[in-house]
Image 1 (cartoon, rainbow, N blue to C red):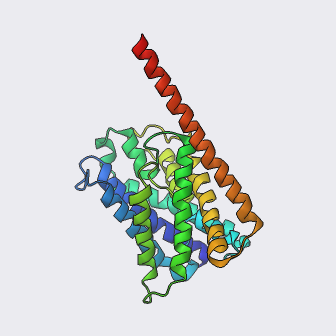
Image 2 (image 1 turned 90 degrees about the horizontal axis):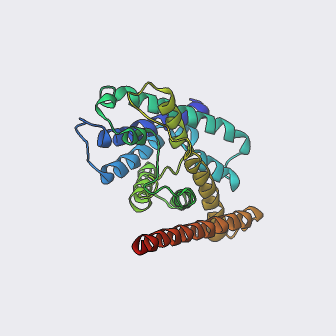
Image 3 (image 1 turned 180 degrees about the vertical axis):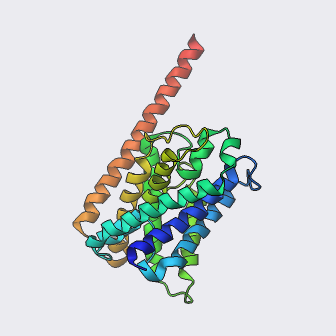
Amino acid sequence: MTEFSGELVGTMILIIFGAGVVATSVLNKSKGQDAGWVLITLGWGLAVALGVYAVGNVSGAHLNPAVTLGFAAIGDFPWDKVPIYITGQMIGAFLGAVIIYFAFLPHWKETKDTGAKLGVFATGPAIRRPLSNLVTEVIGTFLLLLGLLFIGVNEFTEGLNPAIVGLLIVAIGMSLGGPTGYAINPARDLGPRIAHALLPIHGKGTSDWGYAWVPIIGPILGGIYGALFFKAIFEGVYTAAFWVVSVIIAVLFISAAIIEKQHDDKEQSKSRNIKIS
C-alpha cells in the first residue's frame, strides 16, 4: 500500500464504524435504536482505534486533516505530503459514508427525522451559535493533538498505542461532544456531508451547508494549536506561529463570550417586555 491508499482505507474504516454506530443508534427500526450517547462515543473510539491498527504501519494513520496539518506545523511531517494525505482522507471518508448508506438501505425511508438522517453523516450543534460551536471544536481538536503527542512520548506494550488513542477519542466525545457532536476532523464531517448531498436518501432534507464551515475551520485551528502548544509547553520550543495562533485563539474565545453575553441580554430584554405587556 502507498501512503495515499493507507490514508484512504484507514479513513474509510473510521467512517464505516463511526457513522455506522450513529446510524444504529438513531435510525428507525434499527435493533440498536436509542442506545444513546455512550454507545456512540464508544463506537467512535473503536472506529479510530481500528483505523489506526489497519494502516498505522503504512501511513502513520493520521486519518484526519487536522492531525496532518498539526504535525506539519511543528515539523513532524513534510508539507509536500500534506495534499496527498488530505486527499486520501477526504476520499476515504466519502466512500465510508456511501457504504453506510447501503448498509442501512431500508432504514432511511422508515426514519422521518431529517436531522437524524443527516446526523449519521455529519455533525450539527445542539444549540446553534456558530462562534461558540467553533470554540468547542477548537478545544476538542486541541486536546486531540495534544493527547496524540503526549501519548506518543510514552512507552506502551507493542501494539497498544492505537487502543489508547481510541480511548482518547472516547474521552473527548464523552466530555466535550455534547455541544457539537465533536467532529474534531474536517474529513470526518465534510466527506460524509458531501455523500449526504449526493446520495438518493429518502426524505433526507438539507445537508446544512451553512454550518459546514465550523467542523472544518475549528478542527484545523485547534489541531494546529494543539501541536504548537505541545512543542512550546512540553519541549520549550516557542515559535512565532505559536504566538500568532495563541492571539487568534484568544480573540476567538473572547468574541464568542461577548456574543453569547449579547444574546443573553437580548433574551432578558424580550422577557422583560413580555412581562410588562
